[in-house]
Image (tube, rainbow, N blue to C red; front, side, top):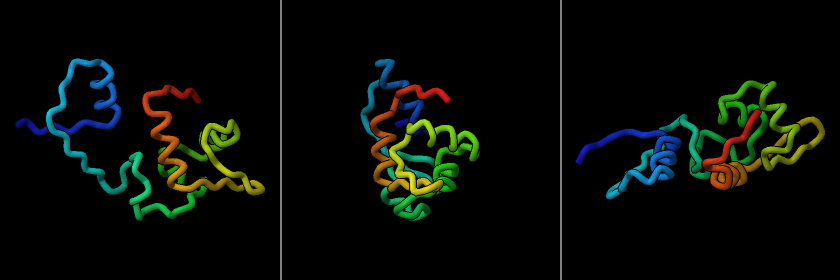
Length: 103
């Protein structure tokens, strides 16, 4: 059997296209990579800050500020700070998989 590496987006695109049959699938989450399975990732605390979100999404602070101010993510604002749990971000990724969010 041929072994290939695909990103989550590549897999999603292939499955939407319908021109692929998956017989076996092994998924390995690489440390330090964005994933939708944050609950088990010890690199991030249970409660994420804006800095954590910037690192996770690989966005700068200005872009993340726009996203947070537009209420796109399920965050709690406390004063000027934002907090969100890893579980909430994981669920948000799952709900929005395949969607195109413009910013």
